[in-house]
Length: 341
Image 1: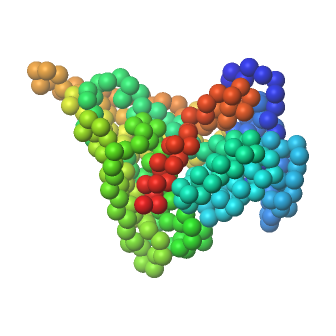
Image 2: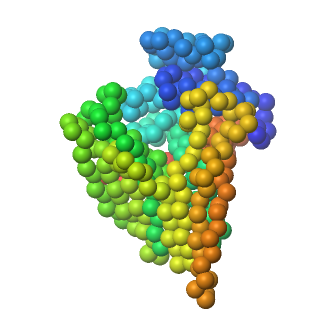
Image 3: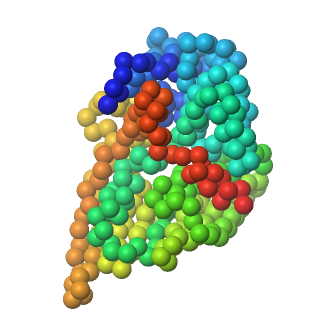
């Protein structure tokens, strides 16, 4: 990693549930530019089993009052993001916030103004830009083997036919439901490729027995040059379809959702272990192209290696060397405007 500096950023986590244990602590610990000093654990104390030197605070206030901490990771429930971002900024912290950043674009704009007033930076944890499967999609698009793009489909499906235990996802509070849960992932991938759409059309649904929130959505986004993008997610798909399907005038590309990082980290695999971030065999993308004479060619696209460490490197470079962070405020506002519409 090109740190270009000996500066160490002292970091703290607001929670040590699944996201803290899997998506944040391993990377803050692995990156030489960060010192993971403290984690808030209000109930069970488990962080020191993994990181013996970390401080386990009993409250968010204790974490925010630690004057040594430069960066706070806000990985609390969705409906608390606005409140916790505001508190962290008021306590003079830079912040890395999980998706969705806030429930509304109005909340986001208010927090951007506050960050500017206190001279602190907000970073958005949109880790799916660094998935192995999405990296393969970007590689194919950059190759221009598809020719002019006509349409792209992105899906993120699960089968969970019961109401889940997490109240902030299943009760009709701010930023609840599937659209706020998986919509930010899919929309951010689209926005990172194509920017703000010319127009869009959104449909949501409630299909599980007893559900109080949406568990299905599909959004069509229209882009210049007749490019149409469709993002879809459902919690009741028994046989998941391909995660990425792209059609251009010269070919088609089909790719399964195959990034393995979450599964590996949950299983205790370390970032430094052999095989980390490498998709399983058989998950490669399939590219079909056609030439001017109508002859088809089939090509297997080898999987890229996935790693979320570059996200943390981007945070480090922004804090230490003032380099632009790849997920912009405009990206997040576009995402929220679509979700809240």
